[in-house]
Image 1 (cartoon, helix red, strand yellow):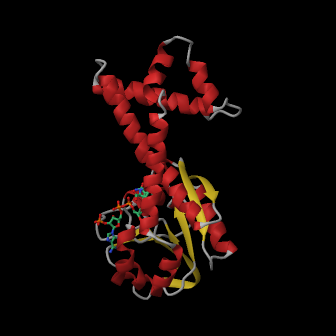
Image 2 (cartoon, protein in one colour; image 1 turned 120 degrees about the vertical axis):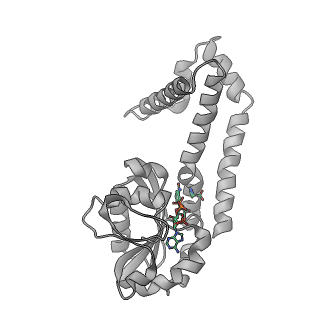
Image 3 (tube, protein in one colour; image 1 turned 45 degrees about the horizontal axis):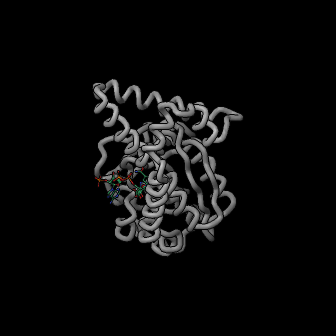
Length: 255
Ligand SMILES: NC(=O)C1=CN([C@@H]2O[C@H](COP(=O)(O)OP(=O)(O)OC[C@H]3O[C@@H](n4cnc5c(N)ncnc54)[C@H](OP(=O)(O)O)[C@@H]3O)[C@@H](O)[C@H]2O)C=CC1
Ligand SMILES: O=C(O)[C@@H]1CCC=N1
């Protein structure tokens, strides 16, 4: 694994429980999860070959960092990239024509509750894809997509998604504090409410999201009043549309 920051270490925490021996190259880390081997520079693995090289550095750094690793890929091996946007074709070219599988995980992978998109690019074999599916299933649910464009849309919806959710929760808690609650009370109430509602909506056979919303909303009651302020003019819907579009557009720029 090349790079082991926030997302790399979230995945490594799950992967390190499996049978593979994992080597991490990251100059900035003092330790990595699960007892994986950590080196700070590629020079320390000169001459060593790996069946899979995971790209977990920022997309903007790939051109500088990754070409040298082409020499570390074992015959028959492949490259697994979690970088947003950066295309499989460009990465393969940078790594001497290596097969590439692109993955878009999200941060709850750290607790085994991630949502990951998988896109096996041209040149990736069924065995490579099966290995990635197994790897990512250890970190949560997976969806294998048929086009790279779709993976960039998974990025906008799920890859970046925890960021939107944390921001919504933060704003919700701030509003709760303005109703007179302490920060701790607001956090507990807001996360308890979001967590409870999501758990209920995730039960097998749960109602549609619209019906669930309606089941909270008494005619002429408090929820109806709150919902009118929240999305009565579709402002929230429009804002979320713009959110996903902006994230997708950025992924396209990073290709
Ligand atoms: N964060 C997220 O929720 C998600 C991120 N991703 C993707 O994951 C990738 C990493 O993102 P994220 O974990 O957030 O970023 P981080 O900055 O946390 O992680 C990148 C890591 O790479 C290290 N690094 C820098 N230079 C090198 C080098 N020459 N060799 C090896 N490692 C190096 C950095 O060290 P240092 O900090 O010291 O520079 C850092 O530890 C990105 O491509 C991103 O698009 C995908 C899905 C979700
Ligand atoms: O913000 C980013 O670019 C990365 C990719 C998805 C989540 N974080």
